[in-house]
Length: 332
Image (tube, rainbow, N blue to C red; front, side):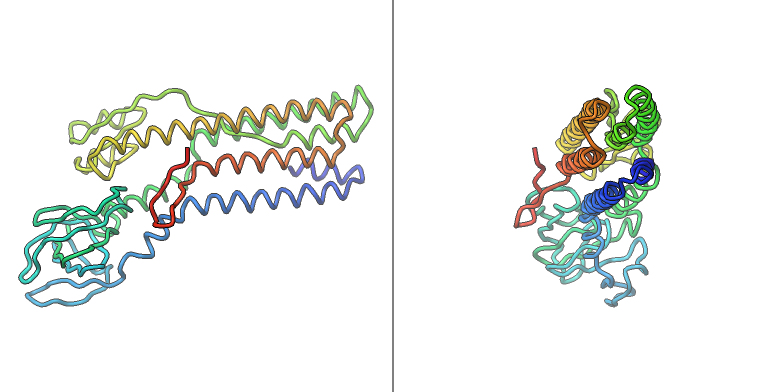
């Protein structure tokens, strides 16, 4: 929108330039808040992990910082406490080794899961009843929770292919808008109409990838296929090599989670197409009206920013909704 702002100011439309700037700032704020909401669940989970833990070492129970845990430590978790490691429930003196654990934030299981001796538990889950003693098998970044954080951080660094494609299309749109504005000026000799064409053409959407083929596996022998597949999916009980080779790692072993992932992917693609087609339609109609002198620079700016805001609001439909009791509800 820099070109539009400069162009509006160049023909004395300072109020229009100010309005464009204000609207763009508002859109940036809304977009930033939308992105921040997408990370809220991860930040909340990070904040609730215990900073200190009780462990059994050399026959005595001592309290240490969570960062000082080592694999093999026997971690004591009281009722109501949060489990700090991925591990296995073990027998521990007066500890009965039996409890129910709320692991919905990790595996999205709606009901607490019974944990007996030999059962696996996940970092970030809540021990509800009965004290547990857990042998630490994965700590820190190696836990299921740590992998979630790592995946989010890794996903935020590079731009997704669809984003890069949208950037290229936006660049083409700029060239098209400048060409259309130049043609408008040559035909009408009306600089205001030409500038309006540039302003209204600022809105842009993302495009969707085509159909992809997914491969689901869990063993070391599946790793090559998971790497080569368009979408590699590793089961939660799979080998470390399989999980590292896959694009998606399920925390549990229920294939229902995979079907839910596919449903989210389809909804995402559908919303991307809606944004893309809507933005193109607004651009073409708006440029036509502006070239015909039916949109002044101010109305062109309003049209552009309204289109951007609608795209952002439409995209927020992908964010999870939470009911009062904390249960996640995915909007349809």
